[in-house]
Image 1 (cartoon, rainbow, N blue to C red):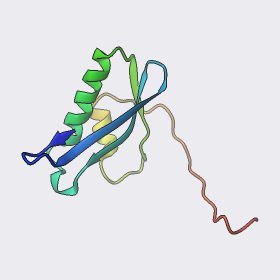
Image 2: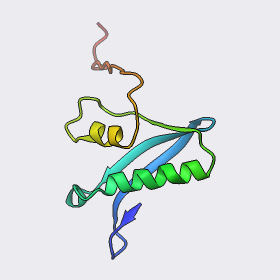
Image 3: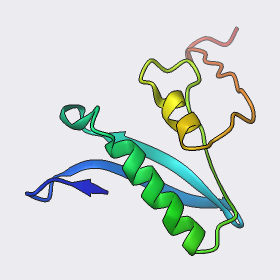
Length: 97
């Protein structure tokens, strides 16, 4: 986490281990008022360094490839490589056909 002087969380990373030896980055967030300061990059980089120290071999995450937030540029800059592209389907549950 990145905190301000008062202890308010400005940016965070939440991880899990879905596959042995692979760190899964489940959530990355930055408060709107703290964006543009490199905090997401810093907390992800710190998380990756801690994962390496803990013995993880790799890290993975999912992101909307069409996101307008610039997340894909951030992950590219941190050395992540696009592995697969998935589609999401949705349907109202009130209709059968």
